[in-house]
Image 1: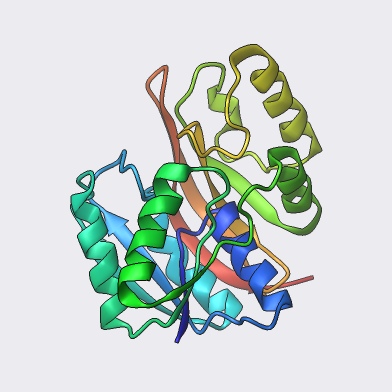
Image 2: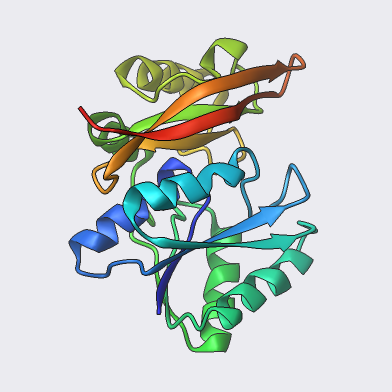
Length: 222
């Protein structure tokens, strides 16, 4: 069983896309839902909509749940892989050694082959690929320099320029792996349909902001 750990964000979606091009087609998307808003391993914002993304890609999808406690959440990830008889795993890690080492350890323990096709990719190269081929939006910000206007905004050339400026000033991780932000993919090359967000709300407390999708549906492309 070839599975992918899937958050609905740009990294995990691009990883699936890349492996598809190498004839490693994900047969199952596993979304781990955390009770902790600031899990060290997992994205939480809008993960309930990953089921819609899976439908758009025509890939089977399951949810698994965790309290999201540091290190303890790894037991729940391991359990999810075992329960679904995963033999090969795709993840979207780009630069987080914390995440990559822990997934590698789990895969080694279970005899699972781990694919991390974005590992070591330059953030600017990833962002440009996302802006050219995907429709991905920013759904959470939690770092100095980020502002409310970025919530719900598409990752396009204008956003990339803004992120480059933030990198120059604050040395942010432009791939967001330092927890600076989260994203959600609305459309991608593998999507047979695109996601239409019918209702969403912004939450902003002056330092952390979220774009919460409340209603969404699949629509035909074009």
